[in-house]
Image 1: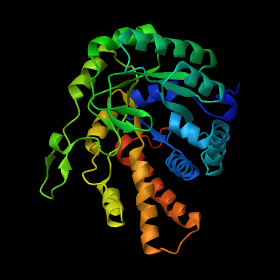
Image 2 (image 1 turned 90 degrees about the horizontal axis):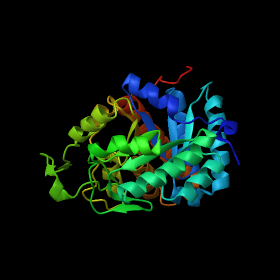
Image 3 (image 1 turned 180 degrees about the horizontal axis):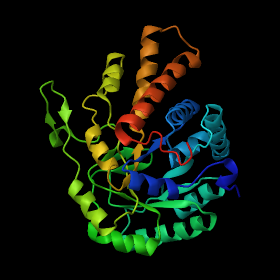
Amino acid sequence: MVNYKELGLVNTRDMFQRAINGGYAIPAFNFNNMEQLQAIVKASSDLKSPVILQVSKGARNYANQTLLRYMAEGAVAYAKELGCAHPEIVLHLDHGDSFELCKSCVDMGFSSVMIDGSALPFNENAALTKKVVEYAHKYDVTVEGELGVLAGVEDEVKAEHHTYTNPEEVIEFAKRTGCDSLAISIGTSHGAYKFKPEQCTRNAEGRLVPPPLAFNVLDAVMEKLPGFPIVLHGSSSVPQEYVDMINKYGGKMPDAIGIPEDQLRKAAKSAVCKINIDSDSRLAFTAAVRKVFVEKPGEFDPRKYCGPARDEMEKMYKHKILEVLGSDNKLANL
């Protein structure tokens, strides 16, 4: 048993309450490798932002659970080395699909877990979430549940259609499960193709313009659960500059589209206190790597293409913290 506090990590409870009260959201950045981790820690430390390091089931398998534990511990030490005396770093399981997986993560030093029973009938989802909560809370690990289904593809998570969260169910779900935060569905979706072209309009330049998020659903949820931490998944904006770079340097990503940042800014000022961003990091990394491969086809040193990718991701993370989420200078102890 590895307790996350021994690694210098924190859970989400205090940072979420401060975010709700302060009208901003905590960045939850998914990572799979060292360069992503370096960029996340550098960006959040430089800007004095709390941060959630998110690991999916697939990323955990890819990176190895033992290495992850030491990477998280190293992230805290690296933040301090960068001059952030009191970092607030969460290691969070994204889309846990079973009690056993969540338990394993708790036992290996995660400070927060998500149990995603959203595809199950309400009662089964509530029962599974409650079981995870009861185990995790023994070790002061916070738990995120989910109501409603997001469309799209992210690692093992796949759904053809989204189902908006039913505001009438949220009070009973929160009461029955004891979860610490709740992911809801208001029209965001996973992956780099969040909407089909037929769901969108096109602007004067011919680019797709996505439909607006269902803020009426968010407002209804907040009315039912005032002050309760709300989470948005599938919230990458899919920056067109990266899509254009990828396509310019040999990629093929027609009609990739994300969530407009102005809508995420609006959500961040509400009870939405955690916003998940994954695809934007993948796009930044891929765009930078493709550029090096085309401009320097003889390059074979991974540092020469992973380094620029790391720099591009750091720039993107800082933009999200400063211009979208508003979490800069929000550490409890600056």
